[in-house]
Amino acid sequence: MSQTVTLDETIVVQRPLHEVFAYVSEFSRIQEWDPGVASGHKLTPGAPAVGSKFRIDMKAGFSLYYTLIELEQDKRMLMTVDSRVFTAREEILFGESEAGTTVRYIANFDFPAPLAAANRLYPSAMDRVGKSTMLGLKEALQDEFEAPAPSSRLAMADRLVLPGLWRFTRLGFKKSRKHWKPVSAYLGDKHALVTGATSGVGEATATALAGLGARVTLVARDEGKAAASARKIREQTGNPNIAVELCDLSVMSEVHALADRLLAAGEVIDVLVNNAGALFNPRQQTSEGFEKSFALLLLSPFVLTERLQPLLAKSGSARVVNVSSGGMYTQKIHPDDLQSRQGAYSGSVAYARAKRGLMILTQEWAERWREDGIVVNAMHPGWADTPGVESSLSTFYRVTRRLLRSPQEGADTAVWLAAATEAGRISGRFWLDREQHPDHIFSRTRETPQERALLLSTLQELLASTREKPSAGQGSRRKA
Image (cartoon, rainbow, N blue to C red):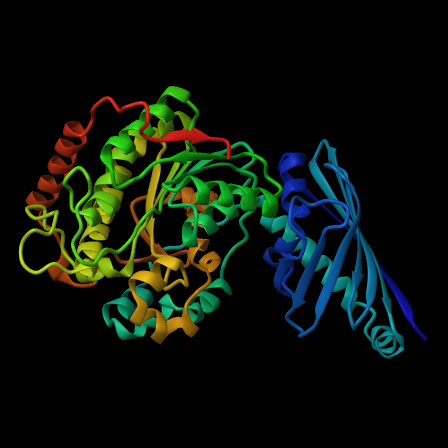
């Protein structure tokens, strides 16, 4: 004989109703609050709507298939559930009271005969499941988590090199995610600018931020790729607020033109993700005479971020995320040879030195802009399977392909730094998989105060010398 079990649980949280609904209705995020869920997957593109489908993989080894059959904005969700274990109808009701926003979960589970017998033997088991899930949701919505502190264990693994390398792979990502806290912060009133946003980690970052509700501006060089990425992000997330800015970030006149356009528009920038990058072999020069790695990876983010500081300051709680690399651990900045003119040229060395310089800028900006409410951090995406890695590091790609992360996994920490409430409490750090890592693992890579000062003064001089009135054709804004 089958059995029907009903659960009815209510929580109250101090969050605006629209924020609570936005978080819960993206139901694939249930893994953040339900302790029995291993992972959630949205099977249909677009914003949550009638007909949206989700697959929820349980830690117990089976999957639940949800279909959203009724939806009232900020009021109600009704879903059917199919699985090999049970079927169900789950309703979530949202409301407001003097105590705060209420969330009521009502579920009717139908168990076939074998499991029905087990339920009759342990009648409180399902009740405990319902209570733990709603308590998890309440904790997620209260959003009172502490930022991760530095770990001496992680620092030691990094310094020993080989024990730390495996963390760059997808295995490291999967291990770390077991300890992560929910991210329920609301981005529906935020504006994010992401560079290098037409593929790989950049596109994945832009997509995730759009999925959290942010207005996203993609900065890209190729108009066709930018338009395609914007369309794809809109379709996947249902977020229509995706804009495009065209700019070759290796050309400083175009970077200044981009900054001029954004400053003239005056729209606040709440999140800036400096992601654009590439590895060049052999040595190449831009049309302005700069070595290309230096121009794209260091001078460009310096010029763009410095010039956009007024728009970041207008936010009052802005985040700057600099996408770096573990390669920086191997190199020291050479402020007297920023363009790799001395000795034999190595693209990977030039890349690593530029990323070392970007880490120095991260620390400088974090200190200088603290009073403006601007939080600045750097992150390592790990070894991700991206077009850039495949084309510029072909041998590495062939050897490590099965261990590489997806672009979404590589982007996760950038998104966390941009969105999580607790990430806004720490600035000037280097992160991998939402954990703090040392900015140096060898003493030989540490710059002197004099070298740091020379780097900063040189970059400032180049910002000034390259700042000329751009021609009308240098970059443009598109609602692609």
